[in-house]
Length: 421
Ligand SMILES: Nc1ncnc2c1ncn2[C@@H]1O[C@H](COP(=O)(O)OP(=O)(O)OP(=O)(O)O)[C@@H](O)[C@H]1O
Ligand SMILES: [Mg+2]
Image (tube, rainbow, N blue to C red; front, side, top):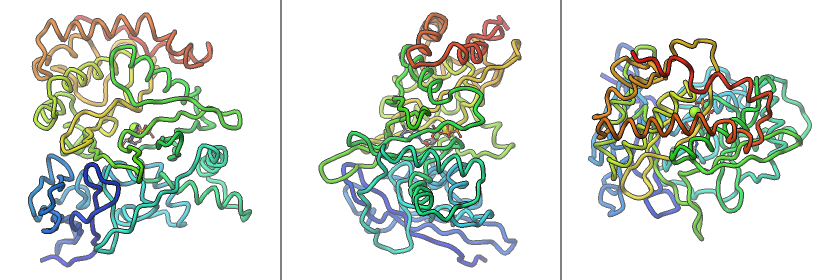
């Protein structure tokens, strides 16, 4: 027996469109034991549309349903991917003054500019989408508002600060832990990633440099640039889930690798985090499996070569610009300089020896990426060479200081990477 407790309508912007239509209904109820169960079903009218598309290609395929899940407090992966994460929750908690927000409140809170093509609301008909966004001219105030949130400074009464904090709410639904917001620039939407005062190095520039290095390695990355506001650097990453048209923004669906793996952040689920299982899923859902698997393999090797050890499955995504899915451009690349020289682990398993960031291990499951041994070695060797020759030039081009290069140098091609076993 269940009692219905909370529910909302789920909207989606169909491929090519710029306005929401109602796709279905999502509810979370509790069993008699008090355990949450999520339910989703597609609306009959939505299913009759010729442009109807699935919310995700694993859990919520295009059938009426109802679908049910007892995982993640009843939240399906595709819905969780459209919700705020650590940073967004900090902003919302500050704004509402509630520190114990429920999952459902987080889902429904804030303006609608979340990642991907989904929207949520309590009316059966969606509201028209908004066309006003923060502009880069607001960035300095937004950076100041982000600092206040990080430092947990009390809200001040002056209206300029209050206004900036209101603006900060835009973009809260984007995931991730670092301070960020969304701004419009040159008729595109960008994620502005700020620095923190307690950062050990210039994060925006180093992320910019690492994205550049990845590109030099042949990896496709989200378009990005550095801007400076009030003497502080900010990384702007162009949103690949939005595309400007004459009448508004198209919204492309995105789903994280965490959802594709049908996994979550709990310690027990972490055991399922794996590039190899991700490759299996990608092979099944991608419109161009061979190219995507080669690309995924390259990203895995790159992450090991530069000690990007925060390569968790929410830092990988698939994207549907139309009906079909493909691997999204790479984003959120950061080096993790470590003292350990013998063994470093990626966040996801990458071979027979688990998460070990080691070249033998990386090559051990080449077949799962649809690569023969020679092809896999060639990709890996090219990445190793490029990282060796170009990491400093890439950082320099990005304006990373000599001091910061020194701080991160141990991230690149550490000793254990080359161990034969
Ligand atoms: N260029 C982009 N276009 C669309 N969505 C993006 C883009 N870059 C990132 N995202 C989405 O925003 C989320 C947060 O971005 P990102 O991972 O860069 O932030 P972060 O705070 O550094 O993350 P983390 O908590 O992993 O350190 C990602 O998980 C992804 O869903
Ligand atoms: Mg991230």
